[in-house]
Every structure is written in structure tokens, then in C-alpha cells.
Length: 113
Length: 113
Image 1 (cartoon, each protein chain N blue to C red):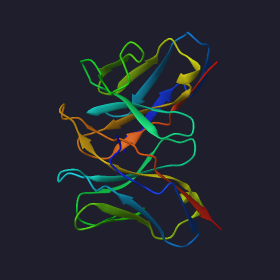
Image 2 (tube, rainbow over the protein chains, first blue to last red):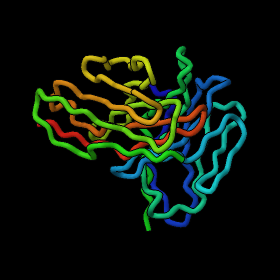
Image 3 (cartoon, chains in turn red, orange):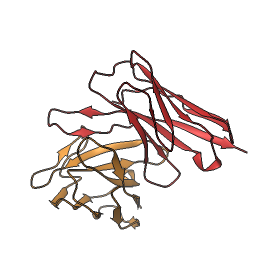
């Protein structure tokens, strides 16, 4: 089962910051938080990941709370092309030492003009 | 980043037949995975394709229905056997190298009549 909870949908005005929340209250100390997005009819695209420190790259920023039970993905200046389903994922390591991504239901972000 | 191609990109098949989907990566990768995305749903992990050994299946998926091969570090196949309309989905190949970001192929859109 997915270990994250996200709102099913959000809206954002073009040019504004999009803040997508994620709850992962049962996260373990060695588990990372990953964010992917899926634009309609395409394969998921990696955005960013982090362990406990805030992270930033050319696409987004990831803010993880100090207790690591929740995080927020920030798209600083949303564009229409950012309309997609955004998945927050806690990466799981199995007894086979195989890391795998388990997807939840995600947040459908609609950016409007 | 890894470039992943899948064949076929889409297909329409008759009930009771089988379809083999190919996944080719442009570089050697440690891990290869197969996901299914049913219409309007999130991604579900089917199995991890292990090079030189049997695939590791997730709960609810069995080898007889979804046989997987991985003859080398750049190639894998997924067969959907004895298909029914419930198998109509997008099937996605995904790869990872170590504990890094995971890349997804464009997907194979399967319709079973």
C-alpha cells in the first residue's frame, strides 16, 4: 500500500507558486521522499527527492518538515505545461534489497490562465 | 538520464491471446520494473525484472499471467497472457541505476476486445 496521502486535486493560477502537500506520517528514518509527475498519456517524470533537508533544483523545491511526517513540493512559477498529476512517493526497500516506487493516487494540478 | 523505448506503443488484441511488450534502454541499468496503469488510475507495480533470474512479483500478480524476461542489462520483456478486457491498460517499463532517480518509458497502451 502507498504510504502517502495527497489531496486529489488543486488549482493554481499561471505565474503563481503551486504548493502541493503530502503526508507521510509512517515514514522510516532511511526512506526518501520522491516526487514525480505524469502529464496526460506520458510516462511519469522525476521531479525531485529528499531525505530530511530541503532540496531545490531547476524544476522545483522540496520542503520536508523537521519530523519528516509531511512535505511540500513547490513549483515557484507555475505554467500551463505544469498541469499534470503529481505523485508523492516514499521509496521502499524490500528484503530483496530492491528499491521500488509505490505510487499513490496523486494530486491532479490544474494550472489556469 | 536513461532513454527508454517500448514496443509496441499501442495494440488492440482479442480476448484469449497474448502480447509481448519489449523494453529497451540505451545504457546498462541495475533495476528494471514493470508497471500497469488502468484507465483513470494510478500506477501499480507488477514486478521487478531481475537479470539472470526469475522476476519478483508483487502481490496480486503471478508469473503465469505476466511472464517476464530480462536477458541482459538493457532489455526486458513483459508478456500479458490469455488476455481479457480487464487487462486493458497502459503498461510501463521503468529503470533505475542504484539508489537514484527512476526513469519511465513512454508506455504501451493495450486494448483487449
